[in-house]
Length: 291
Image 1 (cartoon, rainbow, N blue to C red):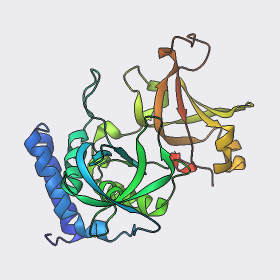
Image 2 (tube, helix red, strand yellow):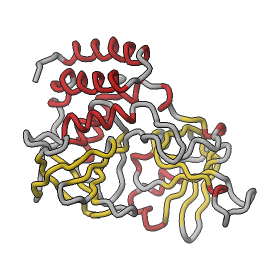
Image 3 (spheres, rainbow, N blue to C red):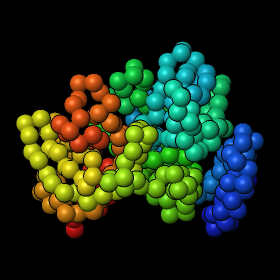
Image 4 (cartoon, rainbow, N blue to C red):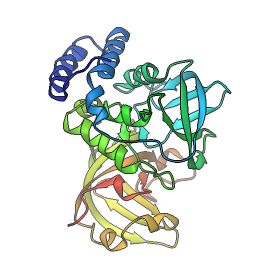
């Protein structure tokens, strides 16, 4: 591995990101960009510690599907815990910026035939049937940490899978402060809550002022200006400070999560509810808590 100082790596990142934009994100530029990050950010990533703690098992990679999902030699699909990377093209939708770069970067870390240590999440599977797990490289590095430190995705906190929370959050902060990857692309800037459109579904960051808080038997609902409402299910309120939630009306916040257009569902009548909904499961999904 080439030794590169943190300051030098950051300077080179800026230069190569300009080159990236000029080359129209071709497959060659994606590969070059990923390889550069793998070398140039090695020292910065090593500053953070996500050491494996607890039981784990050895697995072998068969194929990388995208920036946060792999298929193992036993044909099981593994979704990495703690991050979400840009989406590849699918179902008629164009790929998001850096989606191919994230996939290529993951392949550079854990390509076919790579032996890894796998630590299963406390919640072992998601609703797609994928195994939820942390992966570690033979040299002990966390795969999720490396991706986040390189700016290849956003940190997500979904209980009960909160192991390595502080470490992964720190890795994202490092990428954000140095404007690496998703933190340098305007596509990933927070959307205005009052300007959402039909093509903005999926994982997003949204900014807006909380206009009201409503409490029902099933959930607490934070309405933002425009057409977005945030839902915290009653069963997940235990993860939040209720007094701080009650102080959010009038506060400008930035939230991250999956935007769902409820009007796309046939069972929802237009005008009955705000069309956009985002479910929040952990306080780290909100930036802008009252002091």
